[in-house]
Length: 148
Image (tube, rainbow, N blue to C red; front, side, top):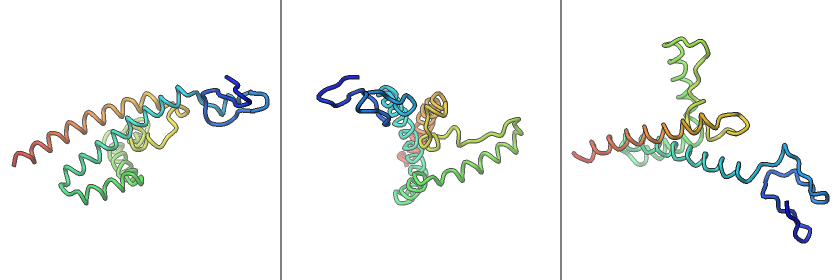
């Protein structure tokens, strides 16, 4: 931590710095590296959400309907679809632990505190798989529509 004319520079955010003593509250301060890492991970999750919206827009074939779906996805209405799919999967496969699709979808993971909930690995895998799978389906669907 550096002091420059009474200002405290400690490359952290989140509060918890006592300016008079320079001491920090470790529970309230996050390192800048952690913030950059979480930003990069949230950017990947956002790219996964965008690939989902792009697939829906390409599949529907209407920009207006795609925009409406994008607004509904951004507002969190996909949770209703995920809960319906989750209950169908639970009835079909009868898992010991109840399966919850929202734990693995990028728009649900985007809204969580990834580091403190221990969801970093799950978020990385979900983002990469979502981007690769949905962009592959989107490009194939677009190629089929484009050839007409």
